[in-house]
Image (cartoon, rainbow, N blue to C red; front, side, top):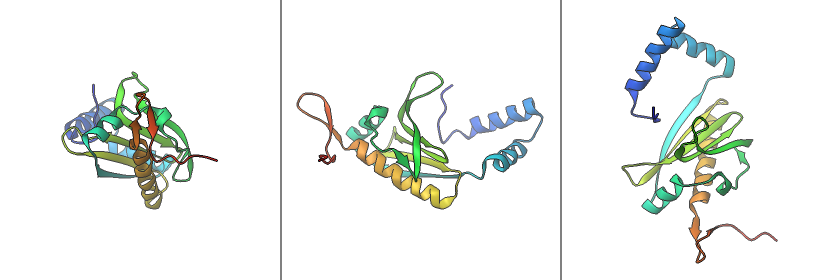
Length: 160
């Protein structure tokens, strides 16, 4: 089944019903246990303007195109553009650090892309993730084709 990050309340309701049926516990109780074990999650979503070309580029990114090594003060552990479960393209980018992550995906209907993020260290850490997510995506979207058909980063400074 394809899973989306928003607009699928019916799927979440069905999942909650299945959790209740299989585990014999209220999903709220299970959630509180997870919060006690892992900490309270903080979540945000922002929309950023994007041209059609930028949306196409974002949907086709490869992990090699991400030059950043840290996210909100933590080493980036994983950069995904494909689902770990079945290898299907996620149509965007997911960057994971120890205490937080973000996903950036182009909208299918609007001239925007969406950044979803979560932190287990609090609201200030979440704000930092969101700021750096925007910088990471902006950097990745600054890639343009050169005459040979290869890509180059137009804002990359030459290292001396």
